Image (cartoon, rainbow, N blue to C red; front, side):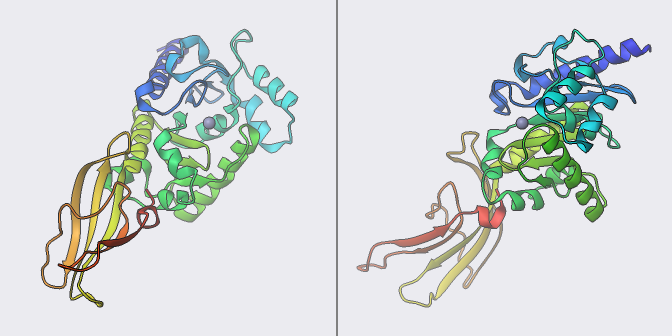
Length: 307
Ligand SMILES: [Zn+2]
């Protein structure tokens, strides 16, 4: 196979990945959000053009770029003008469109072992967590086996940095610290108040990591404490850990599964008990015949499950 054939094949694969990530129904990116890249050879890679949209991308909007013009941006203080000049100088075809402003982190990630494709998106579901104080728990905790397979045992969480060289440097230092501490390379990078980056050897692995990260956000685990009593302390109680999925819209439960429960007198988990879509640690006290009305209090599940 000639190198032109390789290049065309890689460009087609990257286009397919980009179009899939950009499908409106996936809610991963709107307008110019998100970008993708693919390794071509030791010297060059393909990256989404600035101003283009993932969902409507065409082959011409995936310019081929030289590593040696982009990587130095991570080690020097460059103003906007110098960055712009480096992006244009990196183009193999000078008439190709300007590479994305995020090209620097793509270049650095594509230098890492086993990383041939990179997909960066702004998933609505995941950003709900990344824009909250639960991001760390979401990065560290795993809820189901596919998540470990596709997203790794932990995700790398990177604090907010301005797009461009600042973000690339933050990702580099986070990656180096992560691999130093865990001995593993991240598969999923979570950017606080921004979005996610999935890396992999194939477009399929990038798609799988992205899809599982979003699915994880729809899973929740809660510790549910039920108390039914006519006087304090309760004579009968039960505690259950229950997992459930949310609908895509996040406004209703689509499935529940009791994982574990224990009670004072074999009291089974009560269906139809007062829980809502956010679940949580909930204490419920019910009126006894002729007694006062219901009283309840709850805490959000994110403190318990991170998602
Ligand atoms: Zn972004």
